[in-house]
Amino acid sequence: MTKYNCLNPIAPVGLNIFNDNYVKTDVFEEAEAVLVRSAAMHEMEFSSNLKAIARAGAGVNNIPLDKCAEQGIVVFNTPGANANGVKELVVAGMLLAARDISGGINWIQTVKDDENVAKLVEKGKAKFSGTEIQGKKLGVIGLGAIGVLVANAANRLGMEVFGCDPFISVEHAWNLSRDIKYVKTREEIFKECDYITVHVPLLDDTKKMINKDTLAMMKDGVVILNFARDLLVDDDAIEEALKSGKVKKYVTDFPNAKTAGMEGVIAIPHLGASTEESEDNCAVMAVKQLRDYIENGNIVNS
Ligand code: MLT
Image (tube, rainbow, N blue to C red):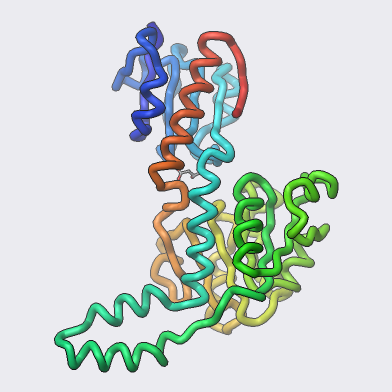
């Protein structure tokens, strides 16, 4: 019998893949296999029972990789499994920045009677007039599973899409999509684009990649989207850029105490992967990985 533990709720369609040889335990120390979504594991003690951790998600920042390596614990993630959910929210984020949809919805909710609603509609038309994304330039930094989906979706919405990723070759890029204009450096995207979205892991090289200096290269009124990781963006620099009008909107799926209520920020409570479909896909992939490792010793991340 293999005991597994779930540190966060995991979709039943995934847990059902465990057969009768597996039993769920609520005691973390007893588990040989652990499933986790967002629970922070850095401060946790790992018992000698623990063989593998599977993250139902792409990022692994909540797992102490060094400690796992030292203790021989294998760590899996589920790249791509929630990419469509994130892509759809990024598109929504661009539309929220272009059109003040939430402002309009809140405005009309102040309605009191029919006469009042007519006035609110009339005034609202002028107050909440926006812009269109068709014809605008979108820069996608990072062309992994999510970045490519975002690029293709934006292209179909009529945006001119630029992509940049130091880890892929031109040949591979062309196979991903012929509609993206590939550029060699992030700087080209910073200088050229009206909307900039980051889809890279948090590494030394990417930490605070949106900062005072890179913001200074950008067009006035640029929209920044961050559905990847909080620390990719320097919040102080964004605050200043929002105040000066350099940045029109900062759309983030990683709000913190500073950005959540900031003027010009559209803050979403980390909902990119929170769809039934993405949660199911991640759970299925994670459980299959754990079983394949425990039963066959295979380490496969897809
Ligand atoms: C991810 O890294 O894919 C997301 O953080 C998943 C999640 O929302 O749990």
